[in-house]
Image (cartoon, rainbow, N blue to C red; front, side, top):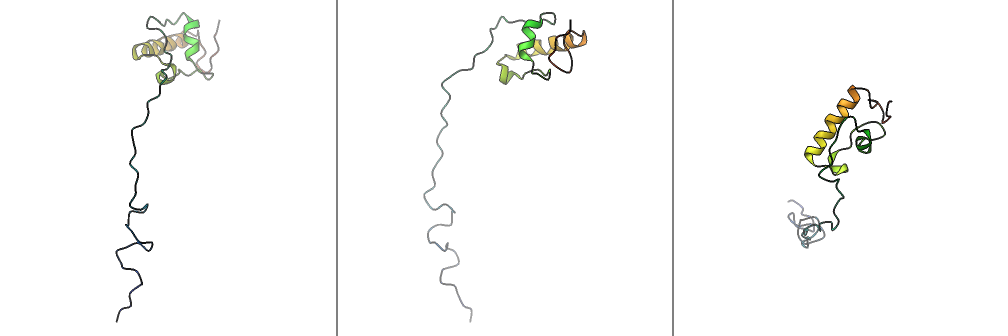
Length: 103
């Protein structure tokens, strides 16, 4: 004869459903959207490799280009910035290693 435990095989030892958290599971609602908007640079902002005053705020201390999700630039502005920074590095206006401006 086989001996059975006090509880049945299909139920949890605490009783109730086998869902883990019980039968009362909360449904996740919609996330609230943030009420503030990120400040974006103006649309008429144009990047040129010779104008280092407009390029330098978009570079990190290591000389890397800040991503668009951080800087708030639009896609065409980010492409202009990338080409301007690369040209300035090639012509040695900006140091390729750091943010230093070479005169």
